[in-house]
Amino acid sequence: MNRDNKTREVTDLKLEVIPRQEHGISRKGISENALKVLYRLNKAGFEAYLVGGGVRDLMLNTQPKDFDIATNATPEEVRKLFRNCRLVGRRFRLAHILFGRDVIEVATFRGHHGSEKGEKGEKSEKGEKNASQSNDGMLLRDNVYGSIDEDAERRDFTVNALYYNIDDFSIRDYAGGVEDLNNRVIRLIGDPETRYREDPVRMLRAVRFAAKLDMTVNEATAAPIPALAHLLRDIPAARLFEESLKLLQSGYGSQTYKLLRDFNLFTPLFPILSEHFTEDRNSKCEQMIELVLKSTDERVASEQRINPAFMFAAMLWYPLETRAEEIAFESGLSYYDAFMVAANDILDEQVKSIAIPRRFTAMIRDIWQLQLRLSRRSGTRAYKLLEQNKFRAAFDFLEMRGEIEGGQLQELAQWWDDFQKADRDGRNDMVQVLNKASSAKKVRRRRKAKPRRRKPTQES
Ligand code: ATP
Ligand code: MG
Image (cartoon, rainbow, N blue to C red; front, side, top):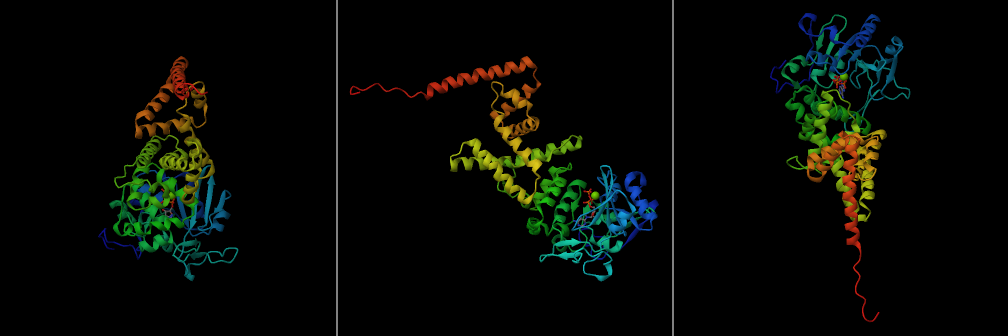
């Protein structure tokens, strides 16, 4: 194997088996449920391996997010072994073994497409081929089953093609994954361009793992990405929604965003935002993206709850403001009405690339609409706002806007901060001050608005 890290390309796989005593993975690091599944498959006479992020993260001494299992049992055979099993996925058929909220994913070894030798998989009901490709090389179905060697070739990155064998506790390293883990390199298996064309989401995964694992994307793996980034536009928006959460809400959002920008991958996900991008990456819109991702990362690190609606609301805010102003100017609608029209426009456009589910778009609208209401606090308004379901999110967001824009917005955020912390009398006093100010303003306005009477002329 070529040891030169920069140029090594993984075309032919060469298996290296690392025996139990020569690697650091122990069963203690593996969840009880994953072990149960591995053992049962093994006892029934099937091959069973822990694979993917589970092995990779354990090798890096970090806690895996989930445990994925690969086996030579077909999904139907897996289902017969487990009562708590559900078969999912069309493009990529999988068995999910459910243990309450914990799901263990079991995938049957994938084989080569079009090769008869790998095709022990069942034909689908309609008799279609189990693997098919679109004109531009994208895999539409990937349900041809094969051996573990073939499976390894179909994995995305070398560090994801490590298999922990439950039969003898050895690790099978097919593509030099251990070496790449040690050198902290993300490297695609096979010819990068072909692999990206088969599944453009692999470009996002390269960036995601680089950010999350603090690794660098190998040169050959990185090179084709900017020119192929547009292929993401063909990916179903629902899949990109799932992917966008993994990219931006898993605790490494800031770094991931930076890499997505570097690789031209951000625009196909958020075309509306890219209209607001500047050379120095410092427009208000870009500042907001960085701010909300930083705060999301901090919340993940301290195990606080995070809500995707908040992130999307923040990211899309400045495009919304711009659009609302344009609509108000062109149509003569009141700013409030124009704002609501713009909110619909922006969300309609965004869901074309990232299918944000309805329950979140409703929340995004609430957070936006509350921004308009937060400045109106006199009388009983402030108290009513405080009781709003989305008040806390709206306030947190107002603070971010204040941080970016300063001035009155920052004062408003400070007022709300004080108001929340004040006791009953304190709150009353704060509102009284506003009431006085607003009635004084009204009087001034009324005086100003009165038309000056002209002196009656002689003739009338
Ligand atoms: P995570 O920590 O996010 O779970 P992971 O590597 O386990 O990372 P999964 O999405 O859970 O990622 O997928 C499990 C494994 O399946 C991967 O490690 C990889 O081997 C394989 N895989 C997943 N998606 C793809 C893909 N698009 N192309 C090729 N192989 C893939
Ligand atoms: Mg995983």
